[in-house]
Image (cartoon, rainbow, N blue to C red):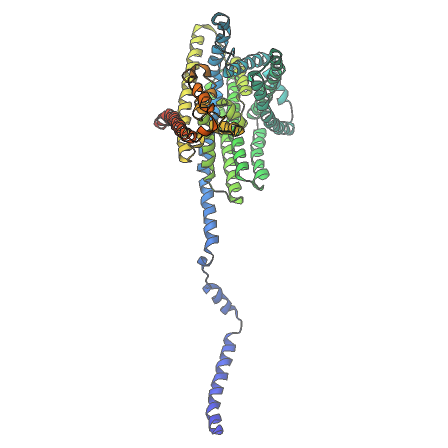
Amino acid sequence: MTETLGFYEKPAVKDEQHEHSDLDDSDEPSLLRFMCAELTRGYFLEHNEAKYTERRERVYTCMRIPRELERLMIFGVCLCLDAFLYVFTLLPLRTLLAFLRVLTIPCCGLGGSRFLQPAQVCDLLKGLIMVLCYSMMHYVDYAMMYHLIRGQSVIKLYIIYNMLEVADRLFSSFGQDILDALYWTATEPKSRKRAHIGVIPHFFMAVFYVFLHAILIMVQASTLNVAFNSHNKSLLTIMMSNNFVEIKGSVFKKFEKNNLFQMSNSDIKERFTNYVLLLIVCLRNMEQFSWNSDHLWVLLPDVFMVIMSEIAVDIVKHAFITKFNDITADVYSEYKASLAFELVSSRQQNAYTDYSDSVARRMGFIPLPLAVLLIRVVMSSVKIQGALSSVCLLLFYLGLITLKVLNSIIILGKSCRYVKEANMEGKLFERPTAQTSKQTPKKANPAKSPPPSAEPEVQQPSTSITKQPTPRAKPFPPAPPPVTVVTSDPPPDSPPKPEESSSETQQSTELKHRTTNKDLLEIDRFTICGNRIG
């Protein structure tokens, strides 16, 4: 049996060995087989779907960055323009009204404890700083500074321009602190009259700062003017290449959302300042060529090239920063909502700062030195003689006021829309209540604390800056007598107090909601106007 089995198994074994030999021959490496394997090799991207989806989202983010960034830049430039036009249009009128108030104090007497409201004091200080710095700028010769800078070599001018940019940022960061210290020193409550003497050193310090910063910006404008008037445009090319060096210094760093917000605000301020510097350069060049329109067409290509290089650098910088730090393009909408929130909150009656000051703190843009320099350049470039020139100046001033009003309505309408889209309406009215809540926990005894309905009614108008709080508090004095009656009751009668306090808190909350809705409706009018205009 085994032999027969072995006899029958021998051919099968031979066939298997033959097949294995054929397979071994087929597995031998050859060039043809390698090419066939390379041409027919496949792979499946869905095996790593998350990775490729993330890469695609990064590409989409980079494609969305230019649009979102430019929307933020346009909104921020409009905010800077509004604060800048405020210095030329409304600040002189507010200063004049405050000065008239000072003159009428001996005739009308003192209506309250203050000679002037805090906002009027700040307006007077700003007006005095502008007048003093403008008169001091007359002793600075722009032509001599231009020729002094033009006689330097290209490398020196490149180094000087970089140093001026760094100095401008340092001056902007420290200058607003000097101005805020002056405003608070002049408006804080003082128990003694001698304490008012401390305003004088702060005032001279602020004047000295604005004057130095204006001279610094003048040197920047002169350097840029030399670059425009150079024959081979080599200096202008080097100054434009300096923007691309900025990409190297910022792209490969670690950025959080807050850091990116600060850099975006700095870019907005830098772009608006460059626009004003280019305007000064064009005015000076047109004056030298007797306002010949043909020379303007010679300047426009260089101006356009500088602006386009600045926009391209900002787009590339922000695109790669968001790519390397995994930040979505929606963050720029949050930045717009944050800027819009500050604008809307500064328009309320309980605002604690002026709008131009809030822009200066957020973006580092201080309009006073730039406004002083622009007035100096315009007054030296344009000669006002005769009645016709005065009429043209008046029409130009009315045009600036119109532009200021239209710009304010548009950005306020857009700001209200951004605040609503970000669901920040509730935070808009939390600041007065947050300040009162910090003071109330000290009085924890319910028998000694007044009912909560009396607190917000008195404290809401007291936070107003533009209006006096005393006439608005007249309807409320009858409320304190019932408070003494309730607190003088013996302790056994204390149980019904929570019901009364709960009803009073409901009434106070209803009043709060009514006032906030009323303020929001007043702000929403600008939303409608802004959407119609924009």
